[in-house]
Image (tube, rainbow, N blue to C red; front, side, top):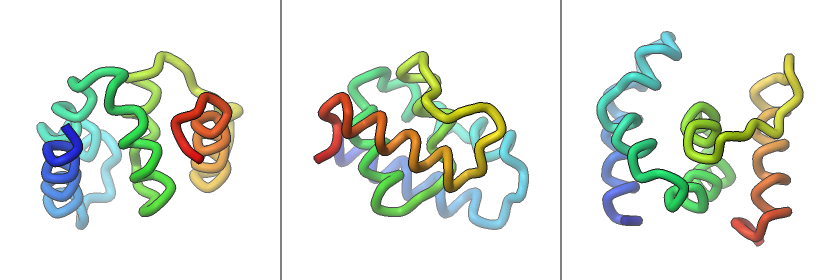
Length: 93
């Protein structure tokens, strides 16, 4: 699954790099396919978020059913909240 994730993530980045629309980004077929992996993709999403912050927040919420970022958080604050959440659950070291 990791290889598929990387391939889909790269396709998504390439196809949406010039888009300013979050809706277009999260409705991209590659992004939706990543969400379709379900909870098993959470560690890969968190590592991607840690190593190369990008708009993985919707995918994380969709696959986990939670959102550890307080309402009104900036992107940076939300990334930090998700990484702390991931560390606290053993997804990240």
